[in-house]
Image (cartoon, rainbow, N blue to C red; front, side, top):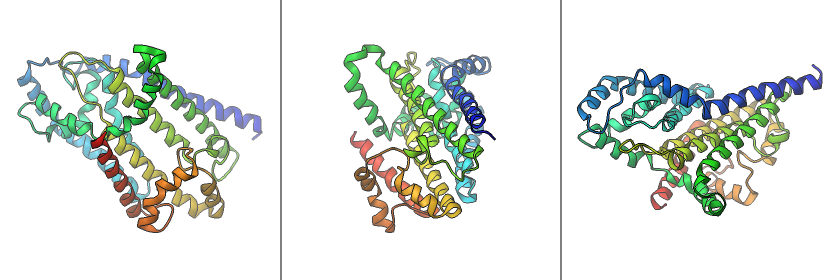
Length: 329
């Protein structure tokens, strides 16, 4: 295939996927909310009995949804089918789209996507569903250290945009994620069409996993929207889920580490050299990268965890650090 044609096909396919990402973020939630609104109830704060009955009727679906999500994540690692783990981790964040709808009852309209989180709410203390939602907020908001980079950005930029700053930054983050996704997909398609074993040029010179990074940046934009842009109706507050975002981020990092083991087995020294000279996901300086690797070197005497147990131990350790920092934040 001629090089011009390869480049053209790569750009077209990447543009299609990137447009789908933008559309699913900015337009699709509104359409889905209108569709779901016809089939879901809209209880006010005083309709506790009716709300309780509805939650009781959909409880099995909530546990089934969360159970399926967990099974996908575990099976993906156990079977080496990492796309299953990615699908499961993305499902954890799917209900964040619910914040695009201003509703009183947390399962109304597109809020019905929160059915995945229903077990977390059900197991929270409280005598009514509204008390349980309030208690679940304390759980979902664990991991709010994730807001640190954004809060710093808000402080730096606050004099320049006033009250519209958060909405502007949300759209900027989403567009930046889409551009990164476009460039990484185009590079990946080009490498595949040219028969290369793996992509190691352009954006892949600065990140070994730019597509995963684009997903994390995109989902971070949704997290920002949930906390800083969304204005719930009176009595319709539902806490943003930084804990689930942090969990998803750790799972994706685990998937990337497992895939690298396969790449090393398949491509040997060529991929090992690429891994040595290219940042893992973020283009960090070498001193910062070495600092982040310190626990791995202490535990396993190597730069990267390799098998599933080592990866699980490492990510659990970092997850606990993030929870402790969140408690202090």
